[in-house]
Length: 86
Length: 146
Image (tube, rainbow over all chains, first blue to last red; front, side, top):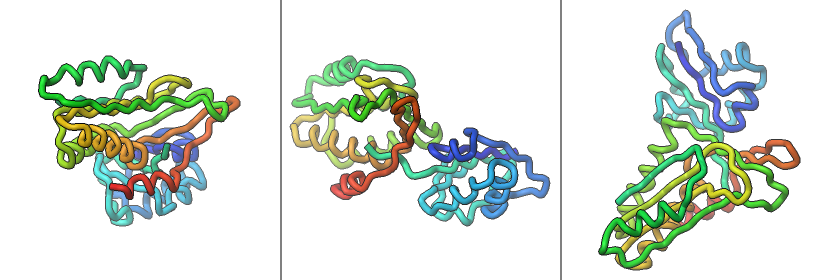
């Protein structure tokens, strides 16, 4: 099971605050995740996540290169839009 | 003394500041900032969401940096999450030091970073509708000061 958490406006776009996926083919990379978001969560979500300002955390660590993400069973991915200002 | 907290219920900033003030007889000055939900623009409510694995650890890292940068005796950083009404406190930062410049500087430093770089997402309710608050240019300018 891989858990994906949507923060801020992305939770509105997704229509939920998180999803859980079971990957039958093992690890999930960044393109796999974008495809899952559009096919199994909501169309247009992948585009919202492609925004380069969206950061990605894997198990509580923000990734410097989100394209290099590889998620394994038990991992939690957080999709983090830009934080709000004052 | 170091008091870093994320709260999901209303809090009393004065009680937290009083506790900081009692922390040490060496304190020469205390500077405090309390941010509240503004009523302007017809705001009915403000909601802050956070991400548990990042938000509180990020506040602790910010406190570490403040202690590294300023000569502090104590630091208080309390931040609300959840739904708040106009007039309710959102954040309280209070710094105790031997001298005023360290206390004032630490509060300014922490507030600029909390507002612009901490892991909080905010939305306001106006006329019954929720609106996400986007990042502002001013926030980047505020961070660049440091």
